Length: 75
Image 1 (cartoon, rainbow, N blue to C red):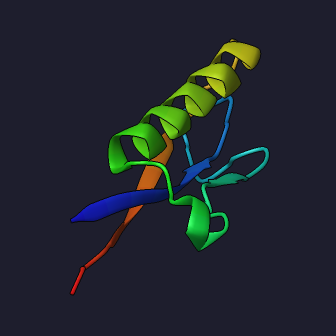
Image 2: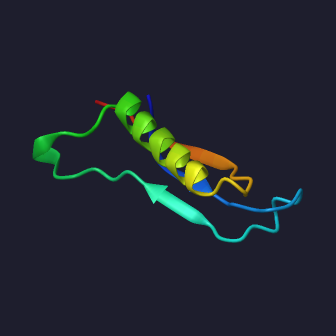
């Protein structure tokens, strides 16, 4: 099972995404194990909402984003 763990955004104002203004990194980290964790769907929803908020805050920039997942196995 893949679990979303982070997202990275690199806002830029031109056609060259390598000339980004800043790098924004978002992470969803587990809390205390006794309390459980968010489901993979909830983690994905949180990251997508954060990305949407950042894009809305920067309407004059292109804001490509990538979400990184981590494979989780249970025994």
